[in-house]
Image (tube, rainbow, N blue to C red; front, top):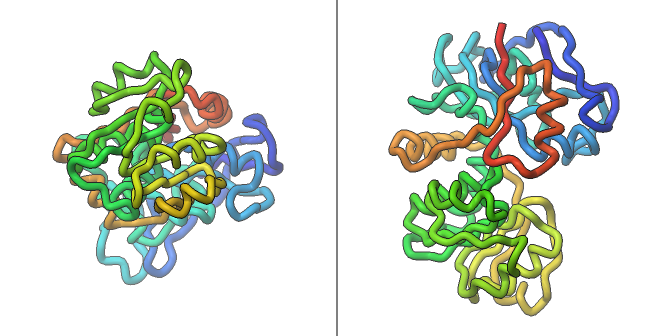
Length: 309
């Protein structure tokens, strides 16, 4: 089978397509023929720095996959050959998603949402689970709450806006002006141009902040959270003033494989409340070009690799 690998850490140019043996599913695992693989910022960071495990190459990137079950391992009863599935297997351990086939525990997958293409489904798991686990599992978002989403037009952000809105929240999004119409179209109640104004001077009494930017954004975000509210940061741990930390619930989170969460995302999709945006697709052989586009941080939604015979 074809897979994208790298022999050294570095820029997009280190990615190359090679032929390797197709894996076989182990006990409790399924073999998925991958139709599409989503890309995420963690992909290029892992390519350049080795990922959360600081692993040395060779390795294959990719966690978001959508495809068809090709074989099932001993003991698997959830899926059968021919089922269409999607998921975020093995994260944060390497899952080899940039490949024609992947194996992983069956419960790292769920049935692909009806109505989504494989490219759209592959855009959903990692970013969607991040948003869902942050907003629902950690912060317990409720109807009527005020939710602030930074980098709202990005991979996690555009899904977080929709999830928060589906839960009945009042959603405030930060993004450049060119993306405001898009964000209003997916449910944002208020949009702030972070290039023109300081968001911290524009909003207050926020129940939940989902911070997809990090650095000084995290400390400034803490200032607008109400007492007892939540500040969840995604790029990495960040310091906030001690006075703010004492009065709010804050911290860094890492997304986890979550079949229950996948079913919740599917329910939102099939109810017409959640739609992943795919801004661009690239064939597997052009993974390096996909990474170049990904690293700009300027795309709307997700970039996806399409994998064909």
